[in-house]
Structure formats: C-alpha cells, structure tokens
Length: 77
Image (cartoon, rainbow, N blue to C red; front, side, top):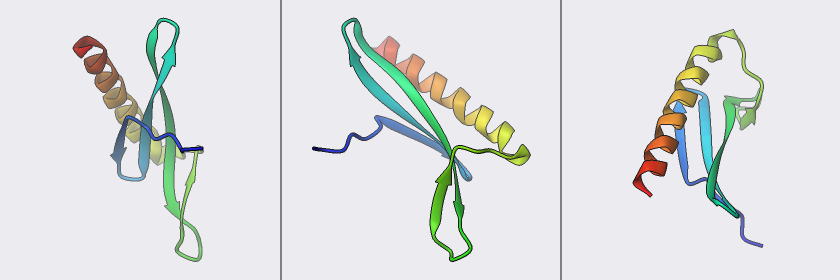
C-alpha cells in the first residue's frame, strides 16, 4: 500500500504543519496536522505533538499560513 503524503507543508523553526487533501462525496476537504521537531539525547530527529510555551506563537503563525494556503487553493479550484 502506497503511503500518502501531504499536499503541502509549512515549517517555521521546529514547528511544522502538514496539509492533507481528503476526497469526500462533496469534493476535497483539507485537514492539518501540527508537530514539533526535536533531537533526542543521541542526536536523532524525533517529532511530537506536544508544544511548550516558546512554540505557541510560532504554531499560531504556521496555522495561519496553513489557513491561507487552504483558502487560496479552494478559490483556485
């Protein structure tokens, strides 16, 4: 089974939003997942959906940009 990929990603620093296109009976509906990237003690990249205080404004901006991208793509269709 092929792995699906997001139609668009937005990243600012360690915060990343992935935008997904989902086919429905009434057309494409978009959804967004939000994650923070970090390195573990061994230096390997990991991700989490937990945000700390310093991530909140960055996450708000990433979500704002995701909203703008989805709105623009809906108007282009």
